[in-house]
Image (cartoon, rainbow, N blue to C red):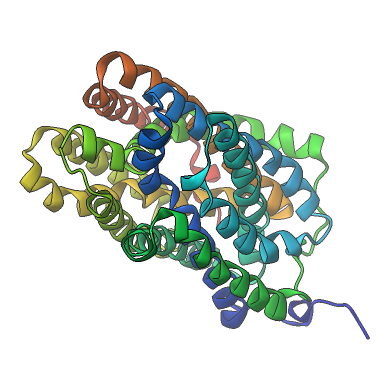
Amino acid sequence: MSNASPSASRPQDEFQTGQIATITGGHTVHDAFSAFFPPLLPHIQTQLGLSYSQIGHVNAIMQIPFLLTLVLGWLADRFSIRYFVIFTPGITATLVVCLGILPSYPLLLAATLLLGLSVAAFHAPAPAMISNVSGRRVGLGMSLFMGTGELGRTIGPLVAAVGVAWIGVQGLWQLCVVGWLTTAALYWRLHMVGAKSQQRATPHSLRVFVAQAAPMMALLTLMVAGRTFLQTAFTTYLPLYMRDVRGLTTFTEGAVTLSILEGAGVLGALLAGYLADHVPRRALLLTAFCFATPLAWAFTQVPTEYIYWLLPAVGFFSLSTTPVIFTIVLTRFPRNRALASASFMSMGVGSRALANWIMGLVADAYGLEAVYTMCVFIAALAIIPLLFMRREDLEQR
């Protein structure tokens, strides 16, 4: 029997709806489970008696495995590593449901390191798989991929809240069966579909790619770093902020606020990714940055009863930039799509690790209010490198 990918016989320009639906469905479930982590942080902090700095270290440790995405991306341009996409929903689900019952800080660090490895193993090849089956509509494919990820991160906190209410933190392990059922479905649909790039030309060598990408990636790194501080504050730290600054003490209240933010991010990601195929991408990013920063500052200033009106707007604009940047990277380097997407994710990794470490230290010294003010200021600076990026890098179609 031939092992050729079914997609290999299809025209490269075809938008393969069935395969995209399978990958994005797996993305939804995978990210729903990974989204259990932020709502569990207040419980974990109380149970283990952790400081903000220690929480920051936990979040930073989770990012370390993402440094392997460059290696995974390089491999995905040459070999099929589809089984990473297939098996990680089950592995991620198993690890995350155990976080709330671990008895010690060292075990928590070890578990989050493994969780980060599983999350990285899914996200390194998946964008390249999406671009391979999106034809010329890479922006639409990436908007669906990122939008379904945001959908998972919207559903995840609500599922965690319901699970805690019904079966308690100690009973969340029962939910991991959903992750393994998803893995079974992905195996059935994707075990013959490669993650290897399907471009007509062979991939550039690593040396050639670095030489071509370095100037653009340097500016992207600065831009992504500024954006990451704001996104980390409004995702990872939001349940802690709502408890310690706004006085919302229940698990459900923290989970609901996070779901409101992420739900708006679904709409932002879908719309921005679609528009990335049709309108200037610099204008899209400038619009998102110019709205997200003042809205985030307003969130820190208004009374608690008004923040629910601001959260959707903050989520819509602050989370809408990722599919646009992914589209820029994937269309700019069509011969090395997996490596290019992995390079972009590595930028985010370093930025998130640094952001979590700094935010934990600042929170211990000055409180979470100071952390949010700092992040708004840093996010405003992200506009500067965007203005210096070349049009031919941003607008490749």
